[in-house]
Length: 257
Length: 278
Image (spheres, each protein chain N blue to C red):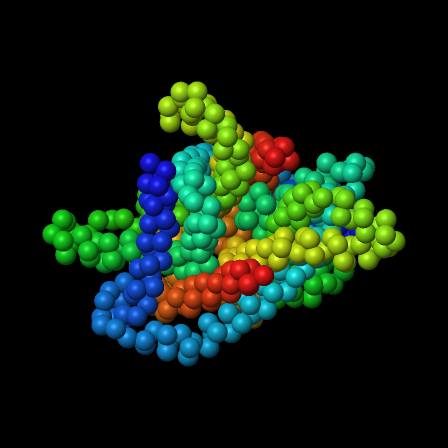
């Protein structure tokens, strides 16, 4: 019974993806129609400059947003876990968790209106594009990082940090030599999560981006409305191969330790 | 120092945008760039209730709200049932299989959100894979109108949101003390009794959190209904999207966003309580 639900769920999750992967190697012009084995859609993918440009922009925005989200999320999680009761703590907690549960269409509109208002008042941001998408994605990612960091900090044995302090280490040294290595897994997980969220986001980027800064998901979404070629299947195979390869690498690194 | 910086990030990136949206619902739409007159200008209050009047002028948006809530509840319910079963399956597997099984659940999500939707389109459309396969098997002669329907949209929603339900329940079930269930079984409880009296109460807060974690974003979902749903099925998220991108009525989009937040306030507050309690 338990196995049944798991197998059913896995088949449901994987069925469209397995079919995408299989038909990526079909020569037919119609997606999901078999036209003999062919690599033509991978070749077409490699020659599609607009798509490659969008992918490169998405990778850069994703990495930058994940990095900012990790720094901000670390600060948020630290304050929640270590600053005890302070004035406004409950508001602080609600605001930290808010991006996790607010509908993205509301967040997208809200950030756009903020950027437009800021521009009217201060002149910055002069135009909407990669920078505004970066900030929008960081604001989403930092909430996920904060949750992970807070949970990790709450689960740490306080004796470790106390021992370092008793032996004469100053707070900064305690943080860099004891705390940071202990919470590193949650930071890495948070970075990856924020990176993935950024790489998959259509809604926030549609709202806050401007002309000339089309991210990969926004580009694909516009193509999807026009009708997609089997290139989409080839791209999915490439992305899964990259993600699977990265996953195996992380797994192998953990085993070797 | 750290706390001031953290406050600054929260106020600038979370609180300020929400306040601007609340305020802009009282702005006036105008043909300029940007296409809106803010409610507070150099001379003080200059706002209007135009946008709010528009929203409540007829039952168009009320119907959209009810439809959105109903579909979000169905999505969250399906995700909860399937996700609970899968979480039980994962946590009752041999320990060395648990991490690979969890990875198997998460890996599909690195194939790209839009690409997965493209796959559903390719599978479900009239000349798509499913119809072609059914016709070839001789089960049907005319293609079934599968795509652009409520069913197709629900399929895409459950497919997209399922991990949000699996993860919190798996995390809670993995921490449960197996001796509790063993003790119940030793005392003569059957499998269903053990499940209903021990496992289910232990996982109930996580299950409620999982339901809300799907329900809340699903109520405002835009992209999946846009790609898979019927074009005339107006939903809350699509209404906001349409007011902004097509009608270019920013105050109406802002007022609709405020209304959506008001509707979701109770579920959001409940979710935050549950996640703090855990």
